[in-house]
Image 1 (cartoon, rainbow, N blue to C red):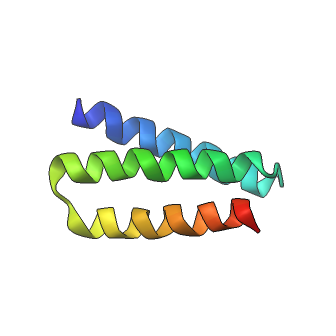
Image 2: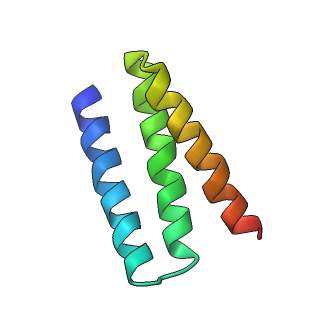
Length: 68
């Protein structure tokens, strides 16, 4: 299960990066928020504190991008 979550997070992150490079806004921000949320789930499951903190920060930054 952890491996599937990690691969899903990777795929969604790459898709979000692609959308960003193609300037597909605001969909790119939604996708990157989803990717960070999936990474948070994986980080909690494997107890990876550094990955959790990085993705919590990214989630906050991406959410701010939706508001502004």
